[in-house]
Image 1 (spheres, rainbow, N blue to C red):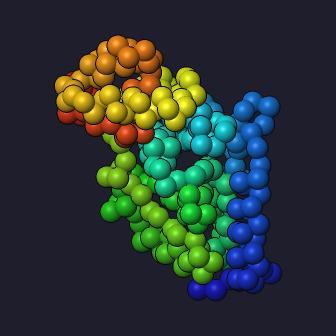
Image 2: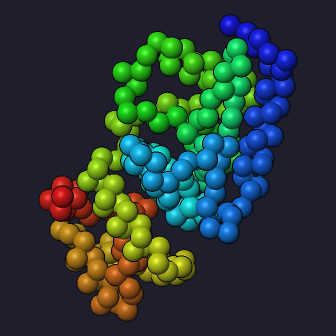
Length: 234
């Protein structure tokens, strides 16, 4: 397979790097949204589109499925991820065929990754697998990691709901380092059966219970009953 266009492979590689630079230099528009190369129209028929208000990205990230929302939440949780964008790249593969990978990610180390999210990798067609193999090789040639991700590595529907609850409550305030560390010290003193106990502990020392939600979301505290709570709440 070859690049049967007026562009050489080097041109394509250079174009990808240019798009990455532009993607992360672009700030949110007047609606506080960060659109990519392919605009996701909210409320599109047959799609569960959404706008995720990302703290890491300083703007709303357009998503076109619950699976993409699950991945955005995972990226927001991941301490190794600095920031990310959706539909940020338009990449020429072969024979004038383009693809728009789901996510462009920058790590804390400054490395770049491209993520494609699918319901099931095992169910992908041979054509799709070949296309992703070409994309992976192309990105690898410029030191960018390509990851193909499916539902097995993402939160399920019940977990998405709980994570959104923690995220929305936990990010209402800007917590300082002292508050976070003090809360962590106090919450380590006991083993909690549920989130309510953590809320009460923080309130007893003069801290807002929403700080516990922040710590839950970012996996800074582990409570034995949390997974059970998620299952029973839904």
